[in-house]
Length: 412
Ligand code: ADP
Ligand code: ASP
Ligand code: MG
Image (tube, protein in one colour):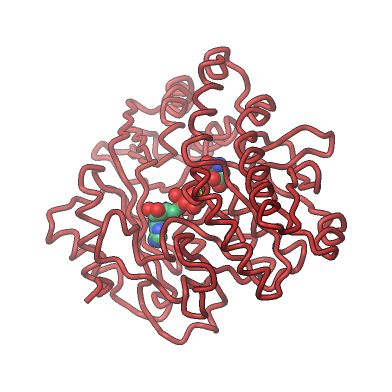
């Protein structure tokens, strides 16, 4: 069972969580619980690390002391939940990442879990102890604290579930499942009873933050059945129809062409004008970005009006926009383009569905729906099960709603 920040936001909610845990224990299950920090706490701590001069001092982005600070929110909620469970007469103890241990690489701030030796946890659970685990945190083989990237408690939960071979990983959150799109943007969004790992992976990586992308990757590779459900249900109320099951495609009866619409405002577009249209130019541009660890997503190149020249546009994460611009300016003479421009007022809107593999015309419906609303498409990219477009950020909600309706996802 994993509980996110809003679910453990104060003592009353922590007591509510404890009752949900107790109900599972009463059903005869051995339970491991993963908790996030109280809502807002991680943001607060991230801001403190900025004030402490992390960015200003030009410290490397992979900062081990950053992790020491931001991992602390989960320590508080794990201890508090274990206390409340004990006060209810249950046998419980807290576990910090290093105590289990949750072993990660040393990419501080976005570490990846490499191994979770399950012996200590299994022994404790075998003795009838409820394991209350601090999410989001791990440790390097050298013993330094790491964190798993924002939203990382989801990944802690799936990784623990895989390590102890759990029958299921229940992700309790502030919505009652995975919806066809973010219910905060479109009130007509529908809860999906089931979604395939692949679709969930696309939805998450294209902006639906209900599950951290890495947690879905892990669930898919380790075949962990995941259920997303609300922490505001009554103890004992959860049934087979509660929430959303993330599972294999074969286990889904209902066939849909498009399952969901995702969006991300965390984008910036870099345009290079007047590039020499010769072999090796793209290689120069992207190796320069790759060396600086700047991830590139969408890319388009087109012929410029002047002979032997091309224009190119690509997208990077919004926080990398300034860096990308600096890198391009520094390499301008070497690459040989005439001008560079960055636009951070862009958003990526995507439709996702395994049904696209076998249906023609899915992209056309997308472009038509956007055209009808007067939304201009700047860049398009597709894969087997998704189509993404880059648009002016001001039209994000309009575009999401138009696509939601166009693919028949609106609640009736
Ligand atoms: P937690 O703190 O429990 O980890 P998050 O805030 O990380 O919760 O994730 C839950 C939020 O994800 C919801 O409140 C919702 O606004 C957002 N969300 C975005 N896309 C979707 C979607 N397709 N289905 C459900 N929720 C979504
Ligand atoms: N507390 C961490 C965050 O806010 C991890 C999580 O909630 O999943 O990113
Ligand atoms: Mg989350």
